[in-house]
Image (cartoon, rainbow, N blue to C red; front, side, top):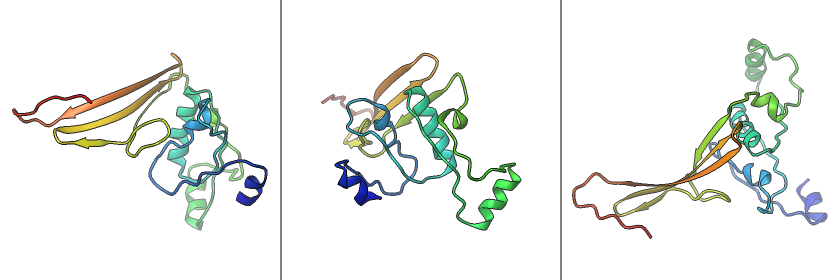
Length: 154
């Protein structure tokens, strides 16, 4: 599939495994050069991604992947009967008052990762709201609790 996509001139960026990392966001933001993403991940991560994408007017299509017999048993206990169903963004995040917040751990397309400096830590966060349609960026500095700390912003 990768070769086929590259043959038509589209760029591909392969992303390794990790905890929840919002690589899906750039596809919902004009000007990032990212138009679509594909991959696999856990159901909780899919719900988090759907919540963020609802706030950004983006879309996710997802389906369950059964890797082990225990997965099928667990789904049956949860009442899932159609294991081939394709879930849309609103299926995964159906709320009307969604608030999504995240903080960059490593540098990404939208947020910088955690930066350590001599006197503390600097983080970049993003807060999205569905009903207010707001995107807020928060740049925070946490200083060490020592009496000799000198504050410097640069």
